[in-house]
Length: 287
Ligand SMILES: Cc1cc2nc3c(=O)[nH]c(=O)nc-3n(C[C@H](O)[C@H](O)[C@H](O)COP(=O)(O)OP(=O)(O)OC[C@H]3O[C@@H](n4cnc5c(N)ncnc54)[C@H](O)[C@@H]3O)c2cc1C
Image (cartoon, rainbow, N blue to C red):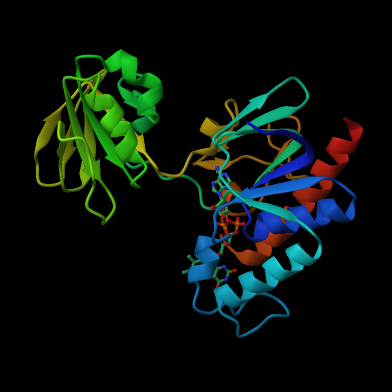
Protein backbone atom coordinates (compact mmCIF):
# COMPACT_ATOMS: atom_id res chain seq x y z
CA UNK A 1 0.00 0.00 0.00
CA UNK A 2 1.42 3.37 -1.07
CA UNK A 3 0.73 6.56 0.87
CA UNK A 4 1.33 10.02 -0.61
CA UNK A 5 0.25 13.58 0.16
CA UNK A 6 -0.98 16.09 -2.42
CA UNK A 7 -2.27 19.66 -2.14
CA UNK A 8 -5.17 18.77 -4.42
CA UNK A 9 -6.59 15.47 -5.52
CA UNK A 10 -8.99 15.86 -8.43
CA UNK A 11 -11.52 13.13 -9.14
CA UNK A 12 -12.08 12.98 -12.89
CA UNK A 13 -9.85 13.85 -15.83
CA UNK A 14 -12.55 15.25 -18.13
CA UNK A 15 -12.62 18.95 -19.10
CA UNK A 16 -13.53 20.09 -15.56
CA UNK A 17 -10.85 18.02 -13.82
CA UNK A 18 -8.07 18.94 -16.26
CA UNK A 19 -8.97 22.61 -16.11
CA UNK A 20 -8.85 22.51 -12.30
CA UNK A 21 -5.50 20.72 -12.48
CA UNK A 22 -3.67 23.13 -14.79
CA UNK A 23 -4.90 26.12 -12.81
CA UNK A 24 -3.71 24.62 -9.53
CA UNK A 25 -0.36 23.68 -11.06
CA UNK A 26 0.10 27.28 -12.20
CA UNK A 27 -0.30 28.12 -8.48
CA UNK A 28 2.59 25.73 -7.77
CA UNK A 29 0.48 23.09 -6.11
CA UNK A 30 1.16 19.38 -6.02
CA UNK A 31 -1.78 17.88 -7.90
CA UNK A 32 -2.98 14.38 -8.67
CA UNK A 33 -5.84 13.65 -11.07
CA UNK A 34 -7.66 10.32 -10.91
CA UNK A 35 -9.85 9.09 -13.76
CA UNK A 36 -10.58 6.46 -16.34
CA UNK A 37 -8.24 5.33 -19.12
CA UNK A 38 -10.28 7.37 -21.64
CA UNK A 39 -10.39 10.57 -19.67
CA UNK A 40 -13.82 11.79 -20.71
CA UNK A 41 -16.04 9.03 -22.08
CA UNK A 42 -18.86 11.47 -23.03
CA UNK A 43 -16.58 13.95 -24.80
CA UNK A 44 -14.81 11.11 -26.56
CA UNK A 45 -18.17 10.02 -28.00
CA UNK A 46 -19.24 13.45 -29.29
CA UNK A 47 -18.98 13.45 -33.10
CA UNK A 48 -18.72 17.18 -33.44
CA UNK A 49 -18.37 20.05 -30.97
CA UNK A 50 -19.37 23.35 -32.49
CA UNK A 51 -19.82 25.52 -29.44
CA UNK A 52 -16.40 25.54 -27.77
CA UNK A 53 -14.88 28.92 -28.39
CA UNK A 54 -11.75 28.94 -30.51
CA UNK A 55 -11.83 25.26 -31.48
CA UNK A 56 -14.62 24.98 -34.07
CA UNK A 57 -15.30 21.96 -36.26
CA UNK A 58 -13.55 19.41 -34.10
CA UNK A 59 -14.74 16.05 -32.87
CA UNK A 60 -14.99 15.47 -29.12
CA UNK A 61 -12.04 13.05 -29.34
CA UNK A 62 -9.89 15.72 -31.03
CA UNK A 63 -10.73 18.34 -28.41
CA UNK A 64 -10.03 15.83 -25.65
CA UNK A 65 -6.66 15.06 -27.23
CA UNK A 66 -5.84 18.81 -27.18
CA UNK A 67 -6.87 19.02 -23.51
CA UNK A 68 -4.71 16.00 -22.67
CA UNK A 69 -1.69 17.39 -24.52
CA UNK A 70 -2.05 20.68 -22.67
CA UNK A 71 -2.31 18.92 -19.31
CA UNK A 72 0.67 16.69 -20.01
CA UNK A 73 2.74 19.67 -21.14
CA UNK A 74 1.96 21.28 -17.79
CA UNK A 75 3.13 18.01 -16.15
CA UNK A 76 -0.25 17.16 -14.65
CA UNK A 77 0.00 13.75 -13.00
CA UNK A 78 -2.94 11.66 -14.22
CA UNK A 79 -3.47 8.24 -12.73
CA UNK A 80 -5.90 5.79 -14.37
CA UNK A 81 -7.63 4.86 -11.13
CA UNK A 82 -10.88 5.59 -9.38
CA UNK A 83 -11.49 7.00 -5.94
CA UNK A 84 -13.57 4.55 -3.97
CA UNK A 85 -13.95 6.30 -0.64
CA UNK A 86 -12.89 9.61 0.86
CA UNK A 87 -12.55 10.21 4.57
CA UNK A 88 -12.38 13.65 6.10
CA UNK A 89 -9.51 13.43 8.60
CA UNK A 90 -10.26 16.71 10.35
CA UNK A 91 -8.55 19.10 7.97
CA UNK A 92 -7.11 16.71 5.41
CA UNK A 93 -8.58 13.94 3.32
CA UNK A 94 -7.64 10.34 2.81
CA UNK A 95 -8.68 8.83 -0.51
CA UNK A 96 -8.89 5.11 -1.00
CA UNK A 97 -8.11 4.05 -4.57
CA UNK A 98 -7.44 0.36 -5.11
CA UNK A 99 -4.55 -0.58 -2.85
CA UNK A 100 -3.43 3.04 -2.46
CA UNK A 101 -4.31 5.56 0.21
CA UNK A 102 -3.74 9.11 -1.00
CA UNK A 103 -3.66 12.09 1.35
CA UNK A 104 -4.90 15.48 0.15
CA UNK A 105 -5.33 18.95 1.62
CA UNK A 106 -8.25 19.65 -0.71
CA UNK A 107 -10.46 17.75 -3.13
CA UNK A 108 -12.08 18.70 -6.43
CA UNK A 109 -14.90 16.44 -7.55
CA UNK A 110 -15.23 16.49 -11.35
CA UNK A 111 -16.81 13.11 -11.90
CA UNK A 112 -19.19 14.04 -14.70
CA UNK A 113 -22.86 13.30 -15.22
CA UNK A 114 -24.33 12.37 -11.88
CA UNK A 115 -25.00 8.84 -10.81
CA UNK A 116 -28.25 7.35 -12.02
CA UNK A 117 -29.53 4.60 -9.77
CA UNK A 118 -29.91 1.23 -11.48
CA UNK A 119 -33.18 0.62 -9.64
CA UNK A 120 -35.84 3.02 -8.45
CA UNK A 121 -35.92 3.55 -4.66
CA UNK A 122 -32.31 2.38 -4.14
CA UNK A 123 -31.80 5.08 -1.52
CA UNK A 124 -34.87 3.96 0.42
CA UNK A 125 -33.51 0.40 0.73
CA UNK A 126 -29.85 1.28 1.25
CA UNK A 127 -28.71 -0.63 4.34
CA UNK A 128 -32.06 -2.45 4.44
CA UNK A 129 -31.10 -5.22 2.08
CA UNK A 130 -29.57 -3.11 -0.68
CA UNK A 131 -25.82 -2.60 -0.85
CA UNK A 132 -22.95 -1.75 -3.16
CA UNK A 133 -20.23 -4.04 -1.81
CA UNK A 134 -21.07 -7.72 -1.50
CA UNK A 135 -17.77 -8.75 0.05
CA UNK A 136 -18.12 -6.03 2.74
CA UNK A 137 -21.66 -7.00 3.76
CA UNK A 138 -21.38 -10.71 2.92
CA UNK A 139 -21.46 -12.07 6.48
CA UNK A 140 -24.86 -10.39 7.07
CA UNK A 141 -26.32 -12.62 4.37
CA UNK A 142 -24.97 -15.96 5.58
CA UNK A 143 -27.41 -18.74 4.62
CA UNK A 144 -29.71 -16.25 2.89
CA UNK A 145 -30.58 -15.68 -0.76
CA UNK A 146 -29.07 -12.71 -2.58
CA UNK A 147 -29.13 -11.16 -6.02
CA UNK A 148 -26.05 -9.51 -7.50
CA UNK A 149 -26.69 -7.06 -10.32
CA UNK A 150 -23.42 -6.14 -11.96
CA UNK A 151 -22.51 -3.54 -14.58
CA UNK A 152 -19.09 -5.10 -15.15
CA UNK A 153 -17.19 -8.38 -14.94
CA UNK A 154 -15.71 -7.25 -11.64
CA UNK A 155 -18.95 -8.42 -10.00
CA UNK A 156 -18.09 -12.03 -10.80
CA UNK A 157 -15.47 -12.30 -8.04
CA UNK A 158 -17.96 -10.92 -5.52
CA UNK A 159 -20.62 -13.42 -6.66
CA UNK A 160 -18.17 -16.30 -6.27
CA UNK A 161 -17.29 -15.06 -2.77
CA UNK A 162 -20.99 -14.88 -1.83
CA UNK A 163 -21.57 -18.40 -3.19
CA UNK A 164 -19.45 -19.67 -0.31
CA UNK A 165 -21.57 -17.86 2.29
CA UNK A 166 -25.14 -17.61 1.03
CA UNK A 167 -27.82 -20.24 0.53
CA UNK A 168 -28.44 -19.07 -3.02
CA UNK A 169 -26.75 -16.45 -5.21
CA UNK A 170 -28.40 -15.10 -8.36
CA UNK A 171 -26.25 -13.09 -10.76
CA UNK A 172 -27.72 -10.63 -13.25
CA UNK A 173 -25.05 -9.25 -15.60
CA UNK A 174 -25.79 -5.91 -17.25
CA UNK A 175 -22.90 -6.34 -19.71
CA UNK A 176 -22.44 -8.36 -22.88
CA UNK A 177 -19.71 -10.92 -22.06
CA UNK A 178 -20.72 -14.36 -20.85
CA UNK A 179 -20.00 -14.46 -17.08
CA UNK A 180 -17.55 -17.03 -15.78
CA UNK A 181 -18.82 -18.01 -12.32
CA UNK A 182 -18.78 -20.60 -9.57
CA UNK A 183 -21.29 -23.26 -10.60
CA UNK A 184 -23.38 -22.61 -7.48
CA UNK A 185 -24.28 -19.15 -8.84
CA UNK A 186 -27.42 -19.00 -10.97
CA UNK A 187 -27.11 -16.58 -13.88
CA UNK A 188 -30.22 -14.59 -14.82
CA UNK A 189 -30.91 -12.47 -17.85
CA UNK A 190 -33.13 -9.44 -18.37
CA UNK A 191 -33.52 -5.99 -16.96
CA UNK A 192 -34.05 -5.32 -13.25
CA UNK A 193 -37.09 -3.09 -12.85
CA UNK A 194 -38.04 -2.67 -9.20
CA UNK A 195 -37.18 -3.61 -5.66
CA UNK A 196 -39.92 -5.58 -3.93
CA UNK A 197 -40.37 -5.00 -0.21
CA UNK A 198 -41.82 -2.66 2.37
CA UNK A 199 -39.25 -1.88 5.04
CA UNK A 200 -36.63 -4.37 3.83
CA UNK A 201 -35.71 -5.94 0.51
CA UNK A 202 -37.84 -8.98 -0.24
CA UNK A 203 -37.06 -9.39 -3.91
CA UNK A 204 -36.52 -7.86 -7.31
CA UNK A 205 -38.89 -7.71 -10.25
CA UNK A 206 -37.44 -8.17 -13.74
CA UNK A 207 -38.80 -6.69 -16.95
CA UNK A 208 -40.43 -9.97 -18.01
CA UNK A 209 -42.44 -9.93 -14.76
CA UNK A 210 -40.32 -12.59 -13.04
CA UNK A 211 -39.83 -11.97 -9.31
CA UNK A 212 -36.57 -13.08 -7.71
CA UNK A 213 -37.18 -13.59 -3.99
CA UNK A 214 -34.08 -12.50 -2.09
CA UNK A 215 -33.22 -10.74 1.15
CA UNK A 216 -30.23 -8.92 -0.31
CA UNK A 217 -29.57 -7.07 -3.55
CA UNK A 218 -26.11 -5.79 -4.47
CA UNK A 219 -25.65 -3.36 -7.34
CA UNK A 220 -22.02 -3.47 -8.44
CA UNK A 221 -19.80 -1.70 -10.93
CA UNK A 222 -22.06 1.28 -11.60
CA UNK A 223 -20.99 4.86 -11.09
CA UNK A 224 -20.50 5.82 -7.47
CA UNK A 225 -22.80 8.59 -6.32
CA UNK A 226 -20.73 11.51 -4.99
CA UNK A 227 -22.42 11.48 -1.60
CA UNK A 228 -21.40 7.85 -1.21
CA UNK A 229 -17.81 8.78 -2.06
CA UNK A 230 -17.82 11.50 0.60
CA UNK A 231 -20.48 11.04 3.25
CA UNK A 232 -22.29 14.25 4.18
CA UNK A 233 -22.02 15.90 0.78
CA UNK A 234 -25.24 17.74 -0.04
CA UNK A 235 -26.89 16.94 -3.39
CA UNK A 236 -29.98 18.38 -5.02
CA UNK A 237 -31.65 16.46 -7.83
CA UNK A 238 -28.59 14.21 -7.86
CA UNK A 239 -26.22 17.14 -8.49
CA UNK A 240 -23.62 18.42 -6.04
CA UNK A 241 -24.70 21.74 -4.52
CA UNK A 242 -21.99 24.42 -4.95
CA UNK A 243 -21.74 28.18 -4.57
CA UNK A 244 -20.04 30.54 -7.04
CA UNK A 245 -16.64 29.63 -5.59
CA UNK A 246 -17.44 25.99 -6.47
CA UNK A 247 -17.37 25.20 -2.75
CA UNK A 248 -19.55 22.34 -1.55
CA UNK A 249 -21.02 22.20 1.95
CA UNK A 250 -17.85 20.39 3.12
CA UNK A 251 -14.83 22.64 3.80
CA UNK A 252 -11.97 21.79 1.42
CA UNK A 253 -14.22 19.93 -1.02
CA UNK A 254 -14.96 21.67 -4.33
CA UNK A 255 -16.93 20.44 -7.35
CA UNK A 256 -17.05 21.36 -11.04
CA UNK A 257 -18.50 20.31 -14.36
CA UNK A 258 -21.47 18.10 -15.20
CA UNK A 259 -21.62 16.79 -11.62
CA UNK A 260 -22.86 20.20 -10.41
CA UNK A 261 -25.74 20.42 -12.89
CA UNK A 262 -26.88 21.43 -16.35
CA UNK A 263 -26.02 22.68 -18.90
CA UNK A 264 -23.86 19.62 -19.51
CA UNK A 265 -21.33 21.40 -21.68
CA UNK A 266 -17.57 21.55 -22.14
CA UNK A 267 -17.28 25.33 -21.74
CA UNK A 268 -19.21 25.32 -18.46
CA UNK A 269 -17.06 22.43 -17.18
CA UNK A 270 -13.79 24.14 -18.09
CA UNK A 271 -14.93 27.40 -16.46
CA UNK A 272 -16.11 25.77 -13.26
CA UNK A 273 -12.95 23.65 -13.21
CA UNK A 274 -10.85 26.79 -13.26
CA UNK A 275 -12.72 28.37 -10.34
CA UNK A 276 -12.58 25.11 -8.37
CA UNK A 277 -8.86 24.61 -9.09
CA UNK A 278 -7.94 28.14 -7.99
CA UNK A 279 -10.05 28.03 -4.84
CA UNK A 280 -8.88 24.54 -3.90
CA UNK A 281 -5.27 25.72 -4.36
CA UNK A 282 -5.96 28.70 -2.10
CA UNK A 283 -7.58 26.43 0.48
CA UNK A 284 -4.58 24.06 0.42
CA UNK A 285 -2.19 27.02 0.95
CA UNK A 286 -4.15 28.13 3.99
CA UNK A 287 -3.93 24.65 5.49
C1 LIG B 1 -22.74 12.38 -27.48
C2 LIG B 1 -22.35 13.63 -26.71
C3 LIG B 1 -22.26 14.83 -27.39
C4 LIG B 1 -21.88 15.99 -26.70
N1 LIG B 1 -21.79 17.16 -27.39
C5 LIG B 1 -21.41 18.29 -26.76
C6 LIG B 1 -21.27 19.52 -27.48
O1 LIG B 1 -21.51 19.60 -28.69
N2 LIG B 1 -20.86 20.61 -26.78
C7 LIG B 1 -20.56 20.57 -25.45
O2 LIG B 1 -20.17 21.59 -24.89
N3 LIG B 1 -20.70 19.43 -24.75
C8 LIG B 1 -21.12 18.28 -25.36
N4 LIG B 1 -21.24 17.11 -24.64
C9 LIG B 1 -21.09 17.14 -23.17
C10 LIG B 1 -19.63 17.14 -22.68
O3 LIG B 1 -18.96 16.00 -23.18
C11 LIG B 1 -19.65 17.16 -21.15
O4 LIG B 1 -20.36 18.29 -20.72
C12 LIG B 1 -18.23 17.21 -20.55
O5 LIG B 1 -17.47 16.10 -20.95
C13 LIG B 1 -18.34 17.25 -19.03
O6 LIG B 1 -17.04 17.31 -18.49
P1 LIG B 1 -16.74 16.86 -16.98
O7 LIG B 1 -15.28 17.05 -16.80
O8 LIG B 1 -17.68 17.51 -16.07
O9 LIG B 1 -17.11 15.30 -16.93
P2 LIG B 1 -16.63 14.07 -17.83
O10 LIG B 1 -16.10 14.53 -19.14
O11 LIG B 1 -17.79 13.12 -17.82
O12 LIG B 1 -15.44 13.44 -17.00
C14 LIG B 1 -15.68 12.84 -15.77
C15 LIG B 1 -14.50 11.98 -15.40
O13 LIG B 1 -14.61 11.57 -14.03
C16 LIG B 1 -14.22 10.22 -13.93
N5 LIG B 1 -14.74 9.64 -12.69
C17 LIG B 1 -16.01 9.31 -12.37
N6 LIG B 1 -16.07 8.80 -11.13
C18 LIG B 1 -14.79 8.82 -10.66
C19 LIG B 1 -14.20 8.42 -9.42
N7 LIG B 1 -14.92 7.89 -8.43
N8 LIG B 1 -12.86 8.58 -9.26
C20 LIG B 1 -12.10 9.11 -10.26
N9 LIG B 1 -12.62 9.50 -11.45
C21 LIG B 1 -13.95 9.36 -11.63
C22 LIG B 1 -14.80 9.63 -15.21
O14 LIG B 1 -14.21 8.40 -15.47
C23 LIG B 1 -14.37 10.70 -16.20
O15 LIG B 1 -13.02 10.51 -16.55
C24 LIG B 1 -21.61 15.94 -25.31
C25 LIG B 1 -21.71 14.72 -24.64
C26 LIG B 1 -22.08 13.59 -25.31
C27 LIG B 1 -22.19 12.28 -24.57
